[in-house]
Length: 308
Image (cartoon, rainbow, N blue to C red):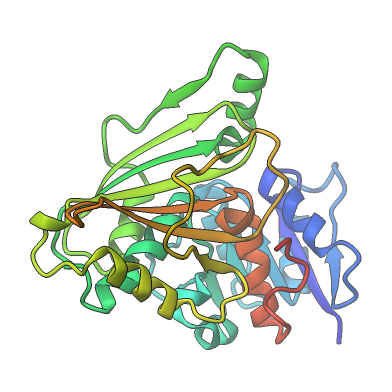
């Protein structure tokens, strides 16, 4: 069976990468609007009503408008914007955390943010297992490739090669924080410190833990074992064993990847730990996650078309 897919916003970074993952796959047929019509509201509405699936790669306001255009259609939607990630009636598109069967049945999927993917992957299983408390004031330190900022930031970094590091969100209240808080199961919003480095893609998300000060926290080994048990058998999420090298690199030449690698580092005396997620912000952090959800919704193997 062939499923029709309309990528609304197919000319953007995320849309282009989704199209690349779907290219050559006989299970899907893309509905494509030419340059003269891709921003035309009537043409987009027609495509939304004709498609089996739509993937919205748009800014929040445009995504909300697209959902309104699709009212009354049979189309099942995956929204890659921030607009619906904590909205009623939408399923969070993180199959490993919310359940593959839940994603497979969903009519409306909100694709996770790139930074939240790393944070939630690390914290949600440990809070659920009682290895970390829900009411601890967590912090998140993270760096991403500049592609996560869209065309404007890509142009800025590529035009000004003197930029090596960009810290932002310094006024707090980053748009990713609500989904981090909700899907990690936390009482308090984490303090989130995002930044951008001079690499196109790649992401490091770290949660430092003063274990000796956290009531009821598990040991370093218990945290690692808890993550390994939660993701056992996952073809996408991998938990590194104890004794990994004392170095993790992000390379500017990173190839597209839809993997998510998790690490638990601990001090020799066990009083401190660093939880780390490494991923491609355009892969499991965006386009790869959307294709994974699309596969499940279409009744296909979740890894089809993914770079693992």
